[in-house]
Structure formats: structure tokens, C-alpha cells
Length: 176
Ligand SMILES: CC(C)(COP(=O)(O)OP(=O)(O)OC[C@H]1O[C@@H](n2cnc3c(N)ncnc32)[C@H](O)[C@@H]1OP(=O)(O)O)[C@@H](O)C(=O)NCCC(=O)NCCS
Image (cartoon, rainbow, N blue to C red; front, side, top):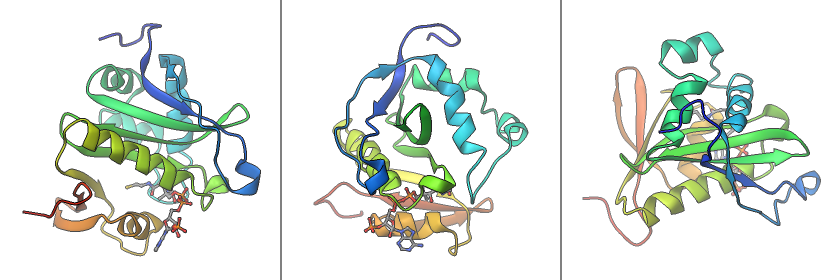
């Protein structure tokens, strides 16, 4: 555990060239440091939908410190950067199979960034031995996130505790 330290965390920086044309290419991968974590909060607190304030996140136990701890354990994240600005990110947990969070800045939605981030997270979960991925989201099916997940093959699992739970199985396997 290196919470608050300078060591690397499980964050992968994706290349940013080509965003102006709506295409992502030349994805360079490297391990990043806790210094990148504040940018995740910058993006998450500016979401067009499903937004959270810093205070709300803190109330859920989600702070820079706890995210760094997670990224030093079974969690891994991918972030997309355009020039010096992080414009989207995604974090998953191979320990439980949870797709923990995904968010893209409003001005950068609909450019394929969310799809690319989710694909990387899903592929990593399967490669890590997970045989099922799951997530929770708002119950409102009119929100973009719901159609986005369905478009990627995620299916409804249950509605519980005021949240919609969805799941995804690896390619070429079927649900139990
Ligand atoms: C949900 C979110 C991550 C999607 O990111 P994005 O970068 O805009 O997504 P993309 O541009 O990669 O689009 C992905 C695909 O989903 C499809 N899609 C998106 N919304 C859809 C909908 N409501 N119905 C059907 N398809 C939909 C797009 O058409 C696209 O498909 P295509 O590649 O086949 O054309 C983004 O809108 C976001 O950050 N929302 C706010 C935060 C949030 O809600 N996070 C999830 C919390 S649970």
C-alpha cells in the first residue's frame, strides 16, 4: 500500500492524439502516480449526468486517499488525456469484478472515449480471471449511461437499494 506516496499506482494513461477527429489512436500505456488522482475527481465532479460533488463522494468514503489505496490494490484505472487535460477515466476491481466508475467530461462525450475505456476495463477483468463483471448505476433508463452499458452488452441484474445493478459475462460464455 502506498497511499499518499509517490510510487506508481494502477493507472494507465491512454494517448490523446486524434481526438479532434473523433478517433483515438496511438494509445501509449504507462503506469502513473498518485499525482494523477486529483484529475479523476475533476472529471467525476463535472459529469453532465450522474454527477457527484466532492462532498458527496467523501460521504461515500471516496477521497483521493482511498482511491490511491484502491489503485494500489486490486483496482486498476485507465484515463484519457487531451493535451494536459484528463477528459475521461474508468476504474475496475479484479477482486470482485466490479466496474467501479466511468466518467467522461461533457465536451468529450460521444467521441468513443467511454467505449474505449470500458473495453480496456472489461478485457482486463476477463484476463484477470473474472467470469462475471457487474456495476451499479442510476435506475433511470433515460440516462445516457444505461444505453451506453446496454450497447456494450451489459444486462439488467436487479434493482436494489435504489440502484440498478447490471452484469456482463465474458465473450463466448453464457449466464448461469
Ligand atoms: C456514459 C459515458 C461514460 C459514455 O461515454 P462516451 O465517451 O460519451 O461514450 P462513447 O462516445 O464511447 O459512446 C459509446 C457507445 O454507446 C452508445 N450509446 C450511448 N448512449 C446510448 C443510448 N442511450 N442508447 C444506445 N446507445 C448509446 C453510443 O452510440 C456509442 O455507440 P457506437 O460506438 O456504437 O456508436 C458518458 O456519457 C459519461 O461520462 N456520462 C456521465 C457519467 C456517468 O453517467 N457515468 C456512469 C455512472 S454509472
